[in-house]
Amino acid sequence: MIGAQAREIILSPLQIDTLGIATAALPSNREGELADIPASVVIPGNQLYTVSTPLSAMVERTLAGLGDNVKKGQLLAVLQSPALTEAQRVYLQAVNQALLASGNLARDEQLWQEGIIAESRLRASRSKADEANSLLTERRQALSLFGMSEPAIDALKKSQILSNRLEITSPINGVILERLASSGQRLEASSPLFKVAQLNPLALEIQAPLAAVNYLKVGMQVKIPSFGAEGVVSAIGRNLNIGNQSVPVRALINNGADNLRPGQLVEARIVTRPYSNEEWWIPNSAIVRVANQAMVFVRTPEGFRTNPVRVTIEGMQSSVVRGTFKGSEQIAVAGIAALKSALAAGGNQ
Image (cartoon, rainbow, N blue to C red; front, side):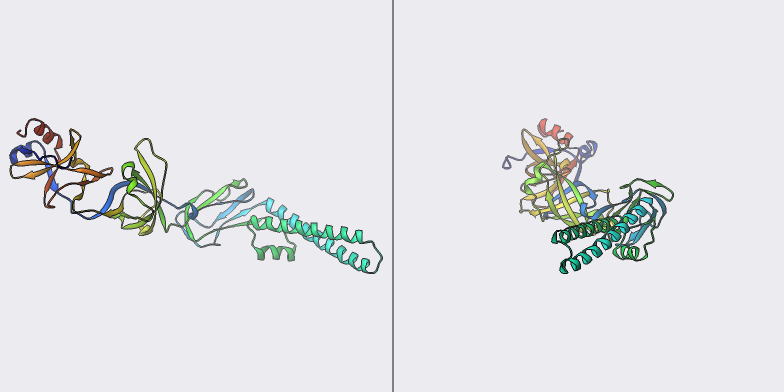
């Protein structure tokens, strides 16, 4: 219990130095933080694109490389694809079939109005025209999926000139993370060419200790002090990492993301809540447990005295404790084993 009686440990300055006992100022009482949490910087899934070749092709040339900033629609590579030529041929064939079917329909409508043909023949002509137009739409959509723009398809329809030139463009404004193909390389359909990403904002995958999860909420502020970056908690996972007993927490970093790199390992802080006057954030190395009672050792003129505390948030390297302090104390942060032995020996070393 926190109300347990404090005990004195008498040690001279020489004994303290000999035992390797080090002290540090009690951290200032401040805004509640779950600090020093391991985390990794990742790209949000909706900001990462893999640009692939839609058809089997050979890379004629690449126009962007690793780290390049690119705009949406910017040309990244030019490929040579016989499969594109075939797709264009099939499209032009569908254009001609649709024109023929449309002409036949117009002629049969005139003949039917003049009473020369039966209505059944007119319905058959309409069916063929509809089928031809549907096929034309399908072939046009295929060319669009293969990377041809609408103006390019219209130009093909007008000129009737086939081309094997396949242009690959960027789907977003972003940065080239990887170039996965080079000039002269032959590729199968769906082979990746580039990875393009938008790098602002970035996401943070945090390994939050299980004991602290109940204090976390979506929307809490997240800080990465070493890199001047901030964001907010966007999701709290339900699954538990058995190895280190941590829960995945995701944050969106929208301030200072330019200071970070995808894949980077960092230490994050999550602002939880304001502490009361009896709560303090101290390093785990300062906390010792004796007979199921957590305590810290406070420096005194005669040596040290125990100060019982209760751990309210247990972090990976630091924890929040509740206890009675003035705020100006020096607490032991190293040589704790020696102090614990002195305490067991009756307070004298």
